Image 1 (cartoon, rainbow, N blue to C red):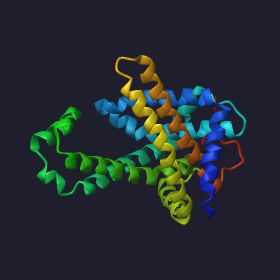
Image 2 (cartoon, rainbow, N blue to C red):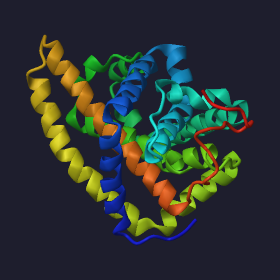
Image 3 (spheres, rainbow, N blue to C red):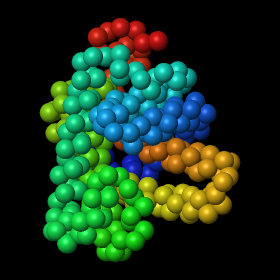
Image 4 (cartoon, helix red, strand yellow):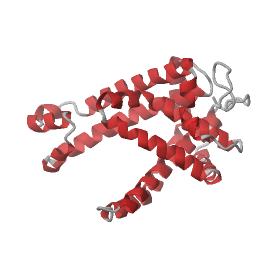
Length: 268
């Protein structure tokens, strides 16, 4: 692990754009498949399984980006490459469980005190997944719910940001990956603060574009598809930035990470 200057954050964003340009359609296809699988997050037990599998699927996307950075063309099935390694897959699923618990605790902490004053009928509807009830909810309640969701996502994201590539590329045990990942962020905090600012600034025109598309998306398959493409493109940029940040701070072994799984078997 090394310290980098704050300005490196801008290089990560620029490199992320460059990586996407070199194999945009292949990466977009992988991202669309991942987005399709995200739909299972709404489906009960399958949703829980998907949440636990998020680190493994993210490792697959990072592996695809690693291949692109070495002038390769990643197969679509690279998304599932982590499932070929039982040892690392178990660690990635354990990370998914840690992220889930940490996210719940953070969201619960952000909501502490608000649940007691919340309408029991509204609370029951939310527990059943009936989001339509939010239309009649108090705006302050909606703000607290949104804040708790963001808190949960932020904590989970911080834990996973470097832990996923450390588990996949570096082969660290889960505990060391979590500690090293958080240390990498803390020791390079100026760069990550600038990175957050840069990604938020990029998210503003993306959000505006999505709002315009959403306003015209009623009954339009084309508009809905365009919204999906915009979302997936931004997600790919985010993961590309994550890849370059990891490579810059921790490095990636020149040994063929893209050619072998952790048990030494050749990947298709």
